[in-house]
Image (tube, rainbow, N blue to C red):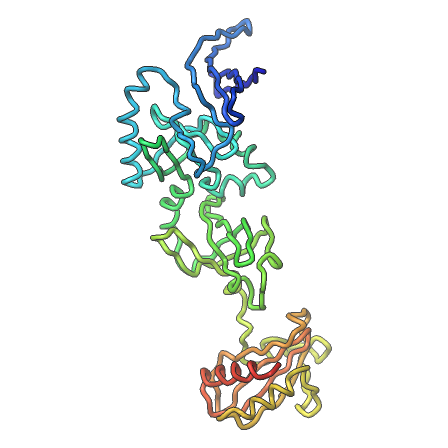
Length: 378
């Protein structure tokens, strides 16, 4: 059974007749060029004959990209020199501007002089999927046929006939020098895993050229066990660049560092005091009027067993407008102890209690004492 396929870029096109052979994933076909006439007839003439055409390919498939080459004699004589040129591009890291000849299930076919190389879909710049998020990768690839793209040669092995390109690496070379630690970007969430999420950074030209990782610990000040519970692919958010590894081409991002640090000095910063006392503002109740949050009584008892801690009491409490966590959480203050007085915040649900601790310990000593206590309290 013959399979007919036609493609056209500009005014020149190609017709392909595919005939399956005994290999299920390989077809043999002949390629014809045509030129349209005014009477809508097409003048067909043989261009080349290619013995094998993989229906699927990926970066690790072992397919020889030279299988895509046409067999004309003048191209054959040029191939050794073109392989040398490809190796030179790889060695120097220079940018190559190549034309997209076509695509398959695994990536794009790229013309490199007399050779045709391969650009796997994972090596595309994120700008394509971000701009056309509703399209499948195959639809995006179809729209790229005939385009000239900037890319780098990442593998050039004449013996195994492998010529692999990366648009992502070319984008890194161009745009990584334009970012610095501390920069803030609008970003789109890409792949999300339990340990973190990959976000695509939006540059001033409106395109998303680079991708960075937000680790689970940098998603929120609240405890996050699985990033997939917080972020979804396609979400828009702001991120801060916290580290750039230029040797490994890696960007580390943070979402939580753009939010106010909840390790606050007093309850006033959790619940503003410029409104009348209500269910959504801090209470001025004395400590003996406040019932400790579940679990605090045991923690207080254990804290008093620690050397250097002489008194622990609840100073006041308030209620937040949102639920941070139903579980009891203890937050250390950023401020060092003053006159042997140190402040902690205990939170559960919407309820927040400010704890005043009398201690001779410094901030590091208080942290270690709390760690020991929490290990003892079930």
